[in-house]
Length: 170
Image 1 (cartoon, rainbow, N blue to C red):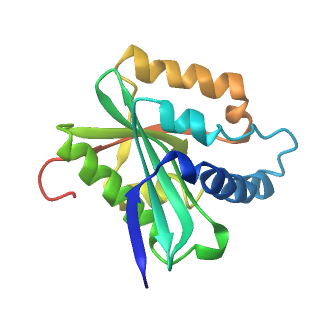
Image 2 (image 1 turned 90 degrees about the vertical axis):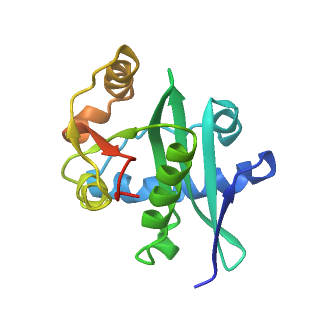
């Protein structure tokens, strides 16, 4: 497998959007959602504090991970992999790369929010070292309100998960 992980740049925006749109269709189909929120524009993602890593599989954009810097805290905002590249470990490699970069930047842990009962959500993240936690800052609590506004709670229980970036986890 020829896989390269690199920081995303502005020229990657269209590919990032295509990846997220295709990956979102898996949730749309699972939930039979008729009003799924549109993905964020990649240019907006790239402008936010934090970082976005792109996975290229044999030279083709295959997935990305977006980590926000929320008031000095690393928050894994999104991981998306094109469905045609699923089940090759790309998502796990992206999560690990995001954790390594957050640790390199001096973070002790990383949070995320996800669906508790979707197999490629909370169970996957648990296998990457994340466990359920409660939001313990205003920035993290505000994410719950955003999920409510987007209507995400309609499709299942959402949870926060946290992974330690110290020790042997990464």
